[in-house]
Length: 238
Image 1: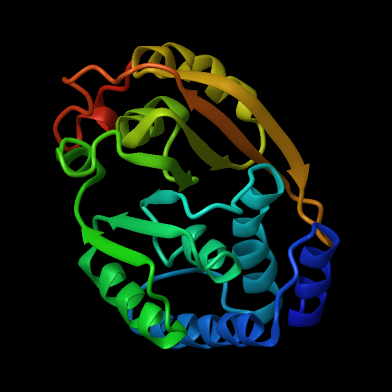
Image 2 (image 1 turned 60 degrees about the vertical axis):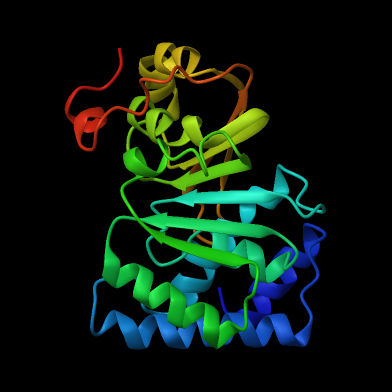
């Protein structure tokens, strides 16, 4: 997907990018490729792959959720900034908080934000388990998202503690999501969540399957969650 095809595909979904936003995506791509030579950010460095599998894929969240208000979003394990940075380029009024456990990635993201002239974004170098215990952030976000970070049972423990009541957790996953949801359903309920919808679709041009799981925060998360760093992965809630 070249930049013009990217622009047209988003326009078909009602997301119209201006020239400045297109320039921001071009700078994003250039900066990503340059920094990827120094630190491992992505295995995809061809323009067509980055625009389709990173930029477009990130923005698919907006096909299923209305980002037209200045809401707060927390992106857990954002890596090279996906999905939150592409979303903020499209919707600059969003208040974005990015959490990542690797300091090198946070350094990259701060540099990227300066290059893109983003102002409504904050970065935190922290483990999601520790961040979710912080009184300053726990149950404060309208939307929490994560992109293929871990299985649903683990991901829910990392993300749902950050979602405020009546907020939403949107998990971006690949194909074959049904088994993950079955395994993670009890954890989601325990942590105060309720599965609303699962959107299954394919990316244009290559037809690879993607899933977006929408989980409403209907109750408070018990204080013991998230457990200490490393425990959710080692001992998932069953």
